[in-house]
Image 1 (spheres, rainbow, N blue to C red):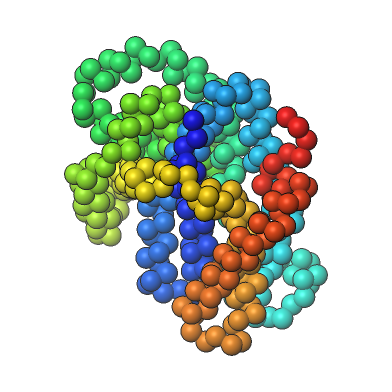
Image 2: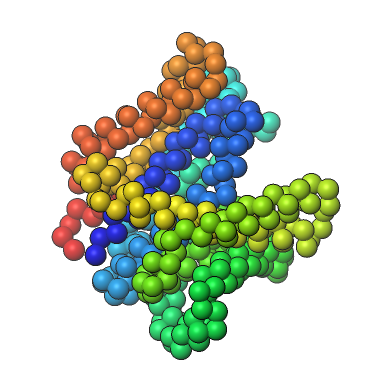
Length: 362
């Protein structure tokens, strides 16, 4: 069975990266609002879908074949992006935000000097591929654990009945917050390292990925998750607003943990809404949405680079930062989609490097 609406939703979440990273061209309350909305649900919903897809691949091919396919699909574009795309992108980011006129070679000799402005990190938008690689290794074990939990799941449904989905939301929220705290406050101190962004996000998003596996295994739960839970959505957003307000006037470990858990809870209810909307409006599998789903990986891999290419080209002609961000984002979408259609999808070697699609017969 092909889940067209989940393909389309995943592609939308990936392409939303163009909007997010276009806001890095400047700083304003509007840009901050766009980033805040994305931070509430975008990656959580993406990892739920990724867990679902990994479970589907595991069910279709088995453990070893699934791992082989996922490692190639994820690892090759990651290496390509880190080696070929990100160094040039970081140079463009540095040039746009600092305007020093340094050449590429001069920048490589002293990358990201102290005090430099701009979102320059070595992984840029590719950070999410590291957790996906780690989660691929977890998928077979998660399946085996779920096979041994059939009776527990049945007891869970009998105990909570129609409220089981809400209890699951709460459990995932608490687990996500707990795993992040475990990584930052316990694990990193035990091994005496500074908590890193990738490690932090890998631990935090693991419950969402595992929930995606559960959704694949239990069709009834998937159907339930694709039905809107309006009361839970409203309650979680009100609770989030209250806890965020408390966090502005009171500090402490309990408040920080509560904020993490409530944000994860809001991510679950918002993901529920996105799954509902996708099921309702994107389930047809139209040629347009199927193409955009296929192109989304190429768009995501290339978009950060092209945003700053166009920003540098247009900056001397466009003084308004909102207009600049809109033009750079729109042109990036058009060019990256065209590159996928006319170049990447037609060249098996480029499709392998950018999309992780092997050119050999499997």
